[in-house]
Figure 1: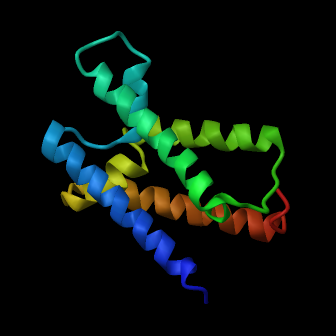
Figure 2: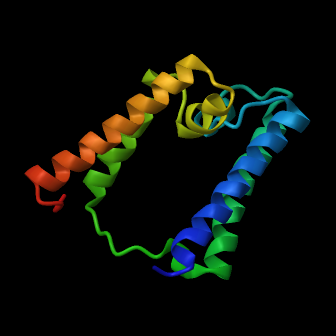
Length: 143
């Protein structure tokens, strides 16, 4: 096992935790990315600027990681565009159905011991495991 196989995810998790705590501490807001993004698709309000900066920070972090450590984003998985679109649609549908996403429920809600977030996180974790099982067993992982 390489050092990077567990150190890089630990650093990433720590940075997510710091960003989440910072947003709550300094802005009083939950770092639910789907809610932040959907808020940008509504009318301009006083909250719009921090949401724009938050999303720009996510994009800038990805670009910075690609420049500093490109292997972290390297992938050998190849999927068809329709399958990727279907996956994106299902994630978006689940996010709306569950009134939040992995960052809102899984990171922020679980940390606050929110019963709704604990149930949501267990549900999307089980759903993801079931999807992997179905794709790997029924389709041989070839989707």
